[in-house]
Each structure stands twice: as C-alpha cells, then as structure tokens.
Image (cartoon, rainbow, N blue to C red; front, side, top):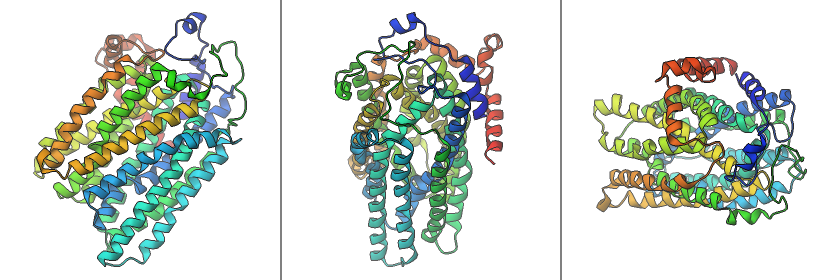
Length: 505
C-alpha cells in the first residue's frame, strides 16, 4: 500500500505556478511538492517502505519502554504520583538539548550514521535495566533502588533521543514529498498503531498473568522490546542517506528569500512564533492530565493492567483506521483547519473522564468509548501538528527550527506534567478529577493562537467542514463526483488497513 500511495502522489505532483509562489506570504520560502533532493521514484518508494517498517518496530520498543506497561512496572515498585509525573516530564525537560542535537547533526556528513549512533546507544542502555531486574528481591529497599535506576535510565535514554530527534525529523522532511506527507505519515502511523493494537494487549496480559509476578513479566516483554528496537535500526539501512553538509540544489521552481540568513531568524519569524505559542501552551495543557489517565485507571479505579492495555488497543485501533482519513484530508484542506476543529473535541475530552467509575457501565461502555474517541481525534492532532511544523519552517535551517520548537514545547510539557503530579495530590482541587477539568479549560484557551497562524494551502474552516463531510460520506452525491475522495470512505480505509496488515506479515 505504501508503494501504491507513493506512486499515486508522485504522479499527481506538479510544480507551483508563479501565482502560487508570489501570493504565498505564509511561508518564508515555497518548495515544489517533489522530493527536495530530486530522488528517483523507485528510491523514494524503497525509502518510505523501509521507514514504515522502522516505525513499526520502533513503536513496539516504545510501547514497552513508555506508556502503561512502564507505569504499571513503576507502580509495582512502589512509585508515587510525583514519581509517575517525573517519569512523564523527563523526556520533555531534556528536549532543551534538541538545539544542541540539531547543531551536532547538521555538522555530520550522514543523517543515517548519526541516527544509528544516537538511537543505537539509547536502546542498548535498556539492557542494563534488564540485568538489574534479574537480581531484585521483594525487599522494599531493593525495589526502591530499582525504581531509581529505572528513572535514571529513562533520563539518559531520553537525553540521547533528544540529541537525535531534530536530525531524524529533518531527514524525513528531506525525503518525503510535500504533497505526500499527510497520506504517507498517515500510513506510517497506521502501521505503527497496528503493532500497538496487537502487541500491547498481549504484553499487558502476559505481564498480569506471569507466574513469576508482574516485575518478572515486564522483564520478559522488555527483552522483546529491545530486540524490536534494534530491528528498527536495521531497516534504516534501506533508507536513502542525506548529507546535511551538501548544498540544497537550486531550482527554477523554488522561490527563496535570502538563503544566507542565520538560523536564528526564527526569532523574527512572527508566524513561527505564533505557532510556538500555540504549540507550547497546548502541550502544557495536554500534559497536565494525559500522563495520569493510566494512573487514574490503575490506582483510583483499581483496574487490572490487562484491562487497561485492552482499552489502549481500542485507542490504537481507532487511531489506525482514522489516520489515513486525516492524512488525505490534511493534504486537501491543510493542517490548521483540522487542528482547530478536532482540537475543540480533544480539549473537552478530559471532562468525559469525570463521568467514569468502577461500575459495569463505565467499564464496558464509558471507558471504551473514551478510548475510541481519543484514538480517533489524536490521530488528527499528532499527524497535523508535526506536518504543520514542516510547513511553517523554511527549507534551510529546518533542523534548527524543529529543535527550537521541540525545546520550547518540551519544557512546557514537562512543566505541565510536573504541575499535574503536584496538583493531583491537592485535595482543594479535587484530586485527579479537578485536574482533568482544569486541563480541559486550558486546552480550549491554547487553541486561540492557532487562529492567527498562516499555513500554505490551508482552506477556510467553512470549506474545510465541507471536505470533512465528504470524507465521512455525509454528502454522497458530491463524493460520486470527486474521484479523489472516494478512498476516504470508512469502509475503504478498513480495506487499506487490512491490506497493510497483510503486507507486514
């Protein structure tokens, strides 16, 4: 399916007209929607297929070393809500190192080798935790020491990840054609979520039923995760390497401003600064509550980890089905309309948690519906917010722009998670319930700056709503007249997802 998608978009790609270039003031430079490095279609196809498989195995590794499985492991070791909040804030605080990572990555001659060095070292560090787990006993002292070691390893691995993130993001921005980004990243993320859909519930069930206990069970799945993480790096060998030192080829179809400007010009880029205001405030509001959903189910509702991971599979399933829908819509109407429209629904989602409990109606209706809603809506948010970063950042100095965005949002997200951990323990705000309500209010306020962000090819909200209606089959007559949107029907998406699953076997 990746091959078919790439072929279709490359055939649709056309240079921008002179009018398109001259009328665009939203972006510092306009780049034709073809591979920036003029890569052959066959090489692009091979690269994107390899990148998809890289994402699948990296997601398996990430699901073991983050999320509900790691949270449950720490709770077994006696972690408090503050330590859970610290766990979630670590990867955000270390994002301050992303500008340094962008600087180092841009001074290498190979994106591939830099990625192998950074992410390979990061994933090998988890072997240390695996060895430490083998000798742990039931002693509270030893368990606390293992808890501290776990947090330390998480801290170091995320430092390494921050040093490599901007370089990897720039690598993908250089390889993926502009008009293919929505659909390709939709397919890639769908494949990754398919792995989550299948793997996480099985691993959660294995941890909860392991005869040697949950800690030993986590050790087993951690060993599988490490193998998957190393396999993901193997697939990067099949991706086209990019030399960040090589000059960007000139093209008559590219309109640029002064290409010799310093990367620090982002400080004078008003559009980018407004985007950062939105991204930072949104990240703070979201991380005020999201890291504590699993804690709420495991600690407040006293649910089994196997049931919690089953809910997670519903989120992954909804995400899988909707990613390709949102990807095609984003390519047609732009990312900003989806971020605004779907963002309102995401903003009020924490309020739905207030109506849940440990009663059968919540366990079998309320909580499953919330997780399906989360998966469907966050598929659009995650996809569009990353694609929009590529849109608002100029072609030159992209890694610097990405690093600055990651650093600012990392700090705001870490502050949100840390603040959430302390606020959750204050009886005056009602514990986690009050925290969820506060997060909903702040999310709605965070959407205001997005109204003023300019994005190339972004349609007005009224036009965007019509496209959404077409995408979900609410206007059948217009769907029949527009062949480009026929693939957006839900049943077609399901067929594509099944086809993708068969290709990954």
